[in-house]
Length: 111
Image (cartoon, rainbow, N blue to C red; front, side, top):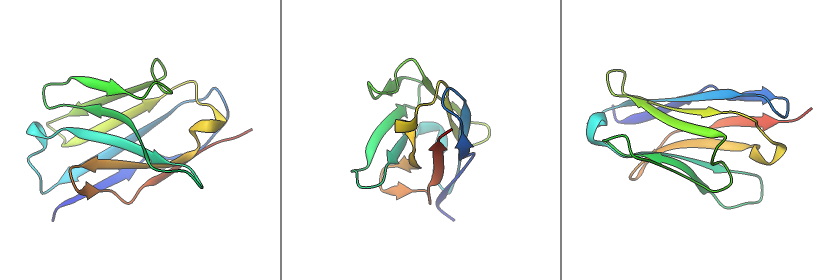
């Protein structure tokens, strides 16, 4: 079955950390560029980070220096380590590969 399944979201205080995971199945993960998007209420979905098959990464300016995307090809999993979280990071986070999307995981940053 071709799917992406995210996990790791939750409620965290400002300044805290979370690590999101996305397990992929049904795709050739090792050669796939993987992306994390997010969508806040009332806003458009935006690209947060991407990682190419060779490990090259790219980030939105709003998360540079705070978020780190990584991958484990042996586990067909991509991660998003989020540090120094801010209330404006609150959103549903989605894993993506081409036209394939996960179901999303909610991240809420609030005191």
